[in-house]
Length: 83
Image 1 (tube, rainbow, N blue to C red):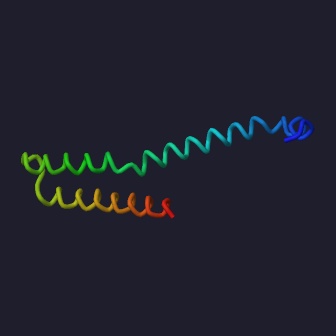
Image 2 (tube, rainbow, N blue to C red; image 1 turned 30 degrees about the vertical axis):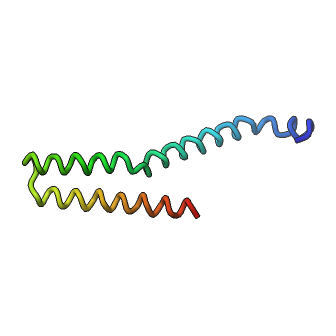
Image 3 (cartoon, one colour; image 1 turned 45 degrees about the horizontal axis):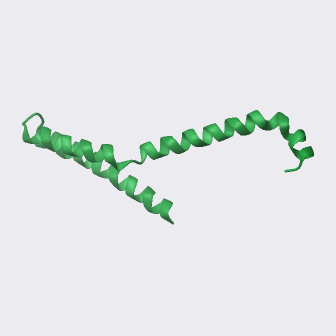
């Protein structure tokens, strides 16, 4: 950018800065939302609770289906991002 362009667009600097921050916050939130680690940990904890007798099979099956659907969503998102 030339000096005149920078001076002319100087009043927009806060907007560009805010947009940059929002962009990075959204990126961080997506990375956290699409991280399979917590889902896998929750599946392991769910199995531990079933084996310990803390939950019944019906509760286990229902929650396991929810978590596996979530993992499918994460994998589909990862495949879409790889393209």
